[in-house]
Image (cartoon, rainbow, N blue to C red; front, side, top):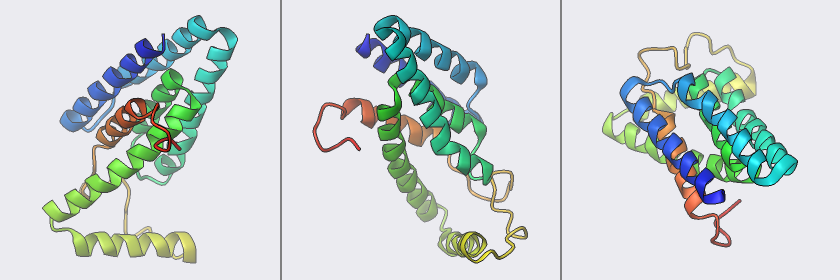
Amino acid sequence: MNSLVNSIALVTVLVAAVTDIRTRRIPNQLTLPMMVLGLVLNTLGSGSGGFLSSLGGMAVGFALLFPVYLLGGMGAGDVKLLSAVGALLGARQVFNSFIWSALAGGLMALIYMVVNRAFSQTFRNLRLLIQGWILGVDRSEANLTIRNQSLIKLPYGVAIAVGTTLAVWLQRIPGLNF
């Protein structure tokens, strides 16, 4: 059952990544059924323990990205995708996926910054964010959310796909899981 669930998770994140690249959206028609499927398969495979593991994974996936969504830093589809990964793989693996996704997302951001020659704008935005979060300075004029059409946006579904793939492939290697 574990290899089936891993395979379903990998196909899900691959479809989400391709969709996110093409449309900049991750549809509910993909994420919500995968949450339900994760709950069902884990329950069938491991009973109530599997159900609780799946539910916990879904909650952890949601909790890890929801604050970023609330701050306007990513779309709801990304949050639901990581929740679906959690429902399929459980709390520990969704956390590993999140860490690898953050690393992949950081690398993607650096590549986008270089390709688009956006160093000065990126550092200006970073300064505004730090002022807003730490110093309590109003950053409303900056409009540093995904709704701002002038900002470069990453298809974070790609980072989640890379992170989930790494988490699944590296799960048996000691020291490479968090």
